[in-house]
Length: 316
Image (cartoon, rainbow, N blue to C red; front, side, top):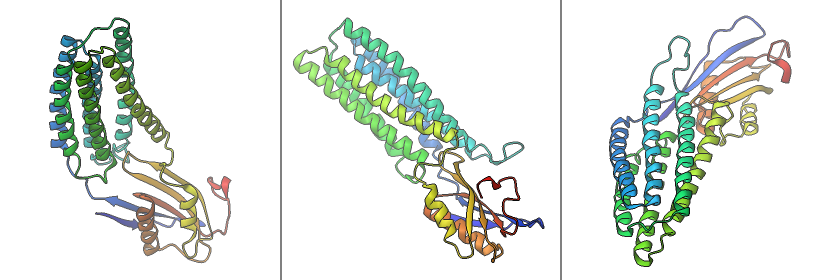
């Protein structure tokens, strides 16, 4: 369960005071064991699948092995980032290392892009020089992949409220479906002898990887640029803040991701007839977390007696 609390910091004696409202989650569930099991199982499967693909001439297996290797790296980076995100703030890192999860997402997107290029090159080469793979071997090896990816996805099912964990779950579940495609391709080759099915399935797998990579890269770059999360409409947030009794105007509203799971907000509230109070700040912070998922809200209260008399006043 998440909770929100607020701190009314000092009034400076100026025409406005500063109030900070912070909503925090309890510590997320520790998925260290799940990450470790997933990494070990998928590393073993990558070695098995890549070896089988090279020995039996299946580009679909090699493509799927490349995809699973990227999953191993993704799980490792996500694990490292989740550990870093738990570290307390210190020194220059006043927010701690929460944004390391954003860097991990961007690094995963780059790794996937490299894997796509390497597998595509080899697939096109194999299409120009086709060899008939052993369909039953393809199906058997990919069947192991369904079991491993499905089990790994199950390890991350219990906390879908954490977007990082949900992403790991969806990624592994999608991999199980990709392995299912390789199984069907192997059975089709065994039944028909059509060698072109193998590189064709490899291209389909690459398309699936590319689609996921594009979404991951787009979202991680947007987060790195501190864009407001896609699910939060700034106009709605502004109207929500302005709806509180005593708030005459809202300006200098900023919403940005602190990590892949936490959102921060700052805003100036003009309140000519009502001074800020701890209870008011707690109420606003709790409402922002409940309605918009904002975990860290910092609110500056102004009396409106000296409009635009501060450095941030350009948009008053």
